[in-house]
Length: 150
Image (cartoon, rainbow, N blue to C red):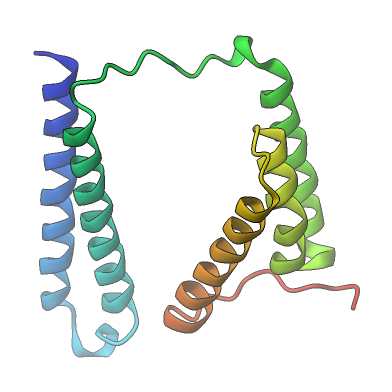
């Protein structure tokens, strides 16, 4: 079996999993339909949409063979830089809170990984934080780390 067929089978499996997750929420008792079922439905729909997008991208690029592989030894400074940044980010989450720590971490991590355009970095940071705010704080009402210092 070729690599492409294996990838397509895996994506198909995830699509089936997304469908089964969504269908399973109908059997939940009424007491959890508003919270747990909504979260499971969100996961199922997100998984399904991401699989559909990935399948589309896979079909679009199936003529091109991806020759680059993740090789930590080829770019050790990027790897260790990101590792150190993640450690610092996790330490800053409690005193600064999720949003302020993320505003500091995301641009630095993007520059470390090779991003150069300030507008792209700024829009990506704003988009990620807006997405997290809308989905986790508003839709799912998940408490994120809050700041302690101020």
